[in-house]
Length: 337
Image 1 (tube, one colour):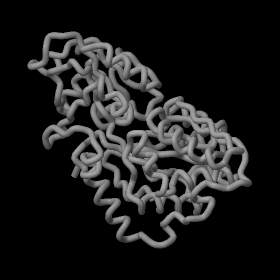
Image 2 (image 1 turned 120 degrees about the vertical axis):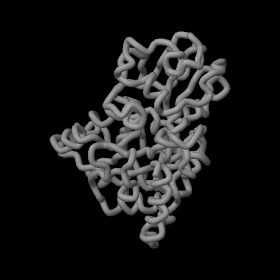
Image 3 (image 1 turned 60 degrees about the vertical axis):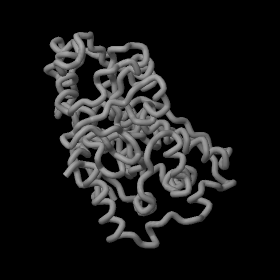
């Protein structure tokens, strides 16, 4: 069973077995984020993928809480955890779950955290709009181009597939601090890391510009960056074994865009949750009334009951991760909440 089919079933089972009144966000002022007495500073950093959601949430929250100042950075998922686990931020954006080395770092720093799923993403492989050969690629073809063994050897498109042209292969992708980098390799190459001879950036807009400016380029990033730039880019359909499937809200939700569909997360310090402005912001983030912000920036909201369970997790102060080893491919996502 592919990952997103499992996700859908798992969430359905969870909603049937555990949907109670306590799982539904309340209509209180803390749930909506509107409280005239709130003030303070909140620092968010991490994933450039989740950045777009957190920026949108922060902007709307501050509009009704003008004495709360929220800064949102993009150090990459790994870079964000380095700051978070040493107490430099209150919230960490993550496009993958926390890894064991980061769990250990947080333990050393005395940072307990609550893990919160916030959206689905269709990690998108993209090519230049003038590329007329790579409309669909199999997982094996993507692996051939990106795996460690390809370094210094796979330099032309026809080495990936003999039907492709004898043209130079230009690769662009996120850096090693990126959760998108980690997830792509978990799902595609089956390795920790990939070839090292491609252009990297923690700024997805740099990858967008690189692919848009080179007919022979290929890159990957979160769906929102493709959606925003689909006039200059093409999304490659991915064949995970059941035929070619394009990234979209429909294929994410029906489980067919596999294996590149994934959940996105935020992590919040348990100590920071004792501060009313932080607690109110997280409750605002989880309020189903605000899920349209997820859609507006180009990602896919979770089912309403899952937001309710995530909010209950926050209110209970339930710490730790449901993903040993920091992996989500093949993991039972019903264990998230």
